[in-house]
Image (cartoon, rainbow, N blue to C red):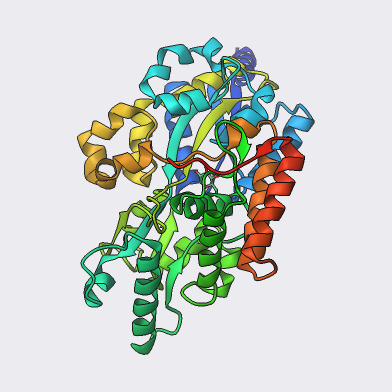
Length: 426
Ligand code: GLC
């Protein structure tokens, strides 16, 4: 009797173990992302006891994350079921993902910003469900602006340069030798493409390749913009900024050692957290404009895509749709200041209370400038590399801006075979 009970238990437990489906989600770990995604996985598992959701941490820098993914795709590996993918990747990576319209996304697609759904649609297939969106912002220290007699954040790059220098000089004289005026993303990687596109577009220098497919990067406004940024290195920005990603900039800023920072919205809730030296002493605004141009924010953001090589695409899609749902995006917005892609969340009182700029800077989010990923697919990664490598060579003083933009133009032409031309005024 005892023995048969034992046998029965083994049988039951064994079959339960076999029925258990495991879904692995490859996710980002910038700021609080990993904790937020793990908490979401936990909530899914509570509602779906037959499923184990593993969250796999991937490298912070977008380029490095892409390399990891490409290796898995190359091997057609079923190891990862759900991939967190950058807004610039649908065109390059579409062939590796299922069409989420075949797995229930049709019912929810309308809730999201149409431009992001369009971005994620390749040949009519929805290759990623939008998860959060991003746009470049200017973070500024309200206490220091007041201390130095400024009544608001700078609206032009020229103003920013002057204010950053004045505050830096003052704070150093007051005894902080580690203080810098402006921190941003200057490493040679995708993040530099984002920052540099903002400089170039805000100077009226176009968006590298126009949506119509003309390579426009080699123009006087773009050259001036990159030249100005290079002048910051070693003056208002540390020399080390040429190896900064988002997190290096945020760490310096959050320790209280910078007057201004360019970063994405995620840095907002962390900056106001209990362990932040600047909690309550900063705000965000649109990035400054160039001479005769208007402010530009690069469009960023991440989607959840289901691998074609997954052994359980149905369950994987269910996990992805759960994580990108209204309730889950709301938690990420309130706790992590990650911008929802579901439009109604911008009218949700709790979201707006936690992150007021989601309302006040709404226009920045909906007017953000897209990188030329659709027009250059499946070669966007190579195009971007050509661009940020050229910009980086100017920041480090290896090339003049004029030479570097000519090199970028030639490289991008080799990669894409597209025509060159002048940017059209917008
Ligand atoms: C952010 C953006 C992403 C961009 C990356 C660059 O994660 O959301 O779109 O490519 O930064 O560093």
